[in-house]
Length: 334
Picture: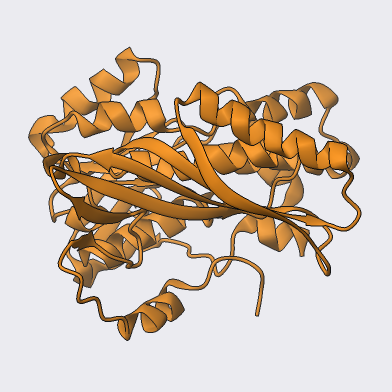
């Protein structure tokens, strides 16, 4: 099989045989949902797990950010973190120490407690792998599910697509970019996307969650915007119609993707999220995000499932939204 996330169809098949008799599980595993939700007396525990397999330079920092994102877009506050860190035999104590320090520093900055995990030297891997589990808490009424998008909702996207992928490629494929004629200044700006706009969506999701007309929220990660929209459509049993001209692609992202022959719609995009919102809450949502420094764009609408996943290219040309069997970053590295 090819590297990357399992296809949505295969994952659905694997989950179809799952039975859950625990009445305290409010939201269990399903395609498109970012977290599980468990009833815990007067509040809900929101739990998510995610690995870091692409980036290596700031692995520990990445690991905390992406797991915090999953909990935050579910309407919860990330509180407790567990990290499993697997290192190749070639790693030194200092290299391991650096990753551990990154995890601790990222947790401290987000007011998250590191409460457990596992570290190990593993034969048969060439680069470190991090797996995290984040636990957050929320009151039941605050939970936002991917599966609650409804026909007629507008789709809002924050920041721009492929922020994370742009930063990773600029940092780890700089020689290829130079060979394609991209100057070092552009590569440096692309690499800085890791910090600005950044890959955290905690503040963005907090703003979105306060809008009473928001029906669903989902962060855009592996597989890019196209995969996120596909996951939303499967979870909510709806279709989407997206306007290509409204999808924000930052200049360095376009340059990096063009140089390497990658489609930004399928490139890992932590740092951006999509939300669905009723028409009467649309303007308020965009204004509240932009007033706090987060660019926000109405990129499309939720339509009937019979319509499928569609992309409007202007001049009334509507095509199927391109889907990706694996993230464009995985395709590049293969």
